[in-house]
Image (cartoon, rainbow, N blue to C red; front, side, top):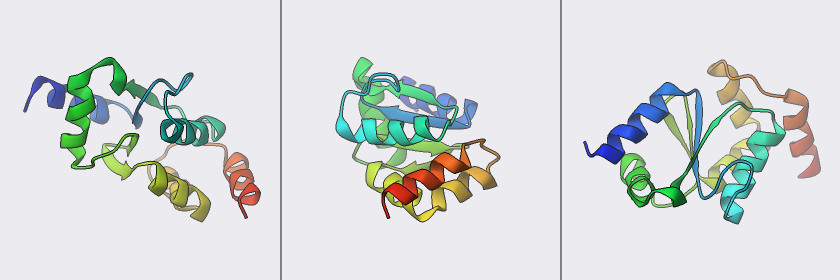
Length: 120
C-alpha cells in the first residue's frame, strides 16, 4: 500500500464519518462537495473532512482506494457509501438516516425530515 493509501485507510478507520472532498466543510470548492457537506452540516453530523485539493497523492489515492472515479466520497464507519448523487438519493429516501442509526452516528432527525419535505 502506498503512503497515500495507508494515510487514507487510517483516516477512514479512525473516524466514524469521513468526507473526502474538494475544499473543506467550511469552504467547499465545488458544487458536488458543497452539496454533500451541506447535507452533513445541516443534519448536524460530526465528520472529518479531507481536502483532496491539498494533496495530489490523496486526490488520486482516494479514487484508487474506493475504486470510485469521482469526488466527493463519503465513508461511514470505514465503509464507502458513495458520491454526491448517491448521498442525495439516500438522504431523500431516508436510507442515509437508517445508515446513521445502524452505525450509532448522531444526527438531527428533524433536519433530515426538513430536507425531505423541502424536496417533496
